[in-house]
Length: 123
Ligand SMILES: [Zn+2]
Ligand SMILES: [Zn+2]
Image (cartoon, rainbow, N blue to C red):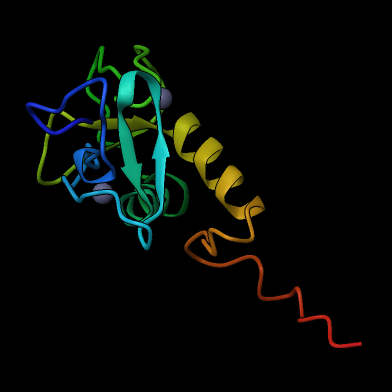
């Protein structure tokens, strides 16, 4: 999301906030953009991934709209504990997790790990 009062013609990194925890976008913090400027940071994505994929929990409410894809979804969702209007559906969580994992610069690992068995190539 954008900070209130952001100049749409001159958006700064610090104007971009995580919809789920309101953290500012910085160079150290991973951010994934959804539709219409919605964003989720790497920490919230990890929490969401753990919630819907590892613990198989869901905070979905009937007719909820995912903050990231803006669709009314039927699949499980993660709801921000601090900003209850923010939901992310499992599809978006998985898409974001897959995209981040493929990006070596992101250095993101899905909770529970999967990369461990890929031993570093030292030959
Ligand atoms: Zn966040
Ligand atoms: Zn979604």
